Image: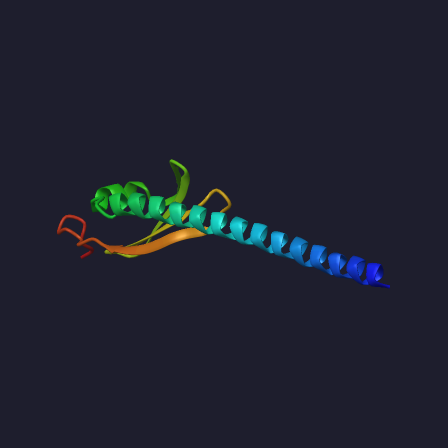
Length: 111
């Protein structure tokens, strides 16, 4: 009888230990995905900071969807002086989005 209790106890212990190992592995994978996502956002932010410095003429040249390095970038102009810039990753998920205001010079101003 004692032997049977020991076997049951060891089985319960083995199941618990296996569950803990599986949870630890899932946690490590989650942390790894979070670090990769954070790195992607930092890299996208660096690129978006450079785009934010582009003058109006450069933004106009890049309107629409374009591949820019590892990013897909979409620039829209919803209003004459407002641009929206969205960076997408390779899976098509939006990583960062911002709006940029560029003063319309007198040569391009609508009458």
